[in-house]
Length: 266
Image 1: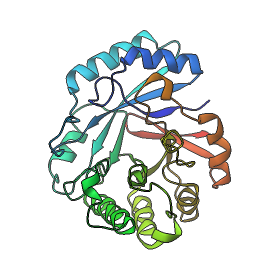
Image 2 (image 1 turned 180 degrees about the vertical axis):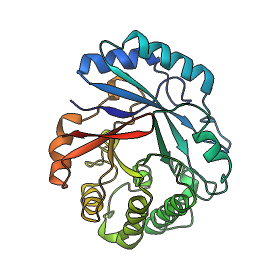
Image 3 (image 1 turned 135 degrees about the vertical axis):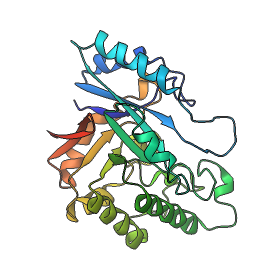
Image 4 (image 1 turned 60 degrees about the vertical axis):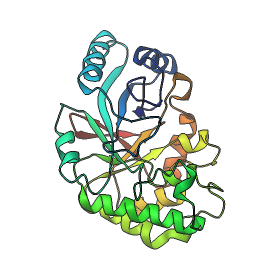
C-alpha cells in the first residue's frame, strides 16, 4: 500500500475526525505512512467555515502522536495552503512558520469566490468557469514557489453544475499545458488526488490524460493523496492507483520529509 500525503482532521474546519482515529485507520489499512495537511486558507471568503488552523496546537498533537506510533506507522507534519495571488507576502511567511515536512499549494478561491458554491458559476458557461479557474491556478503558480506539490489542479470539476460532463484535457489543453510546464520549470510536484473517485467523477484529480501529459512533458514529482477528511475516506481507491499511475507513464511517486523529496517505487 502507498503513503497517503493529503489528510485532514478536526484541526481543519471541514473535518470532525480526531487525529488519532486517522492514524489508527492508517495502521489498519497497512499504510507505511501518512501526512496530515490541515487547511490554512488565509483571507478566505466569509462563510460558515474559516479554514484557519491553530498551528501551534496542531503541531503539538501531531508530533506527540508521531512519537506514540513511531514503531507502527510514519506520521508527517504538513499543511495545505490556500493560494490567492494577492497574498504575496503572507503565503511565503506561512510556508516558513513551522518545520513542515510537506506543503501543498491549492486553489480553493478564484476571483474572491469559492468554486464549491454556485455563485462562482453564475453568468458563465461551464467552459468559461472552468477556464477561469485554470487561469487563476496559473496566476498563483507564477506568483508562488514556496510549496512542494500543487493540489487537485482540476478541483473545480468536483463542484461545477455538470461536474466533469464535457470536461477533458483536450478541451483545456493550452492552459493546462501552461500549468504543467510551469510546475516542471519551478520544480513543484503535481498531486494525484484520489478523491475524484469519491465524488463520483470516475477519475482522480487531475484526470489520467493530464497525468499522462505531465509525464510526457518531463514531470517527475508526483504526490499521492486521498484528501480524506474522515477515517473511512483515507487511501480512497488506493489499490487501483498503482496500475493507474503506471499506465500514465510513472514508475515512482514522491513523498516529502523535511521538505525534501523521496521517490518510492509504485
